[in-house]
Length: 118
Image 1 (cartoon, helix red, strand yellow):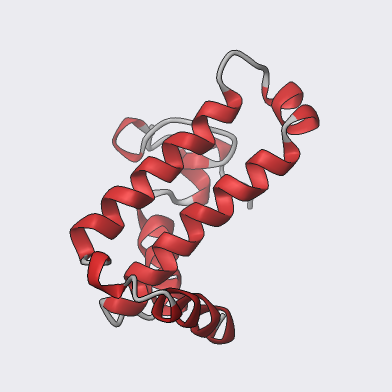
Image 2: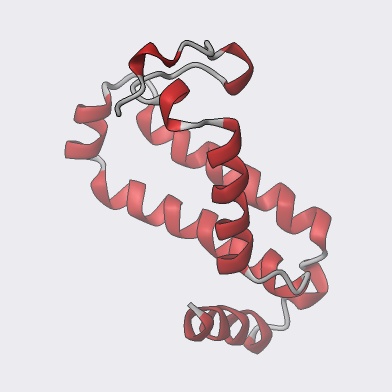
């Protein structure tokens, strides 16, 4: 991952774009690219979009990740550590016995342990 981030930053710096990459504008650009990814799926089923628009999905997802990785780099955020920390927090909010097979948000989950496997 570090090598990929170095490549992204080198690409940006070779073009003197850092001057435009403040945290607000990077976050805004990340959101805009995420919306472009959503647009690929508009008016299609998931299967149809994945089957017919695979290249566009890959390109838009790459744009989202590039902006996210650039923002993390500029803010000196260790992406791997941040992801691991978030998974740990989510494991507390979404324990298996409450959330397995459910799409409910953590504050809507039942505390019924009858589904817990022993």
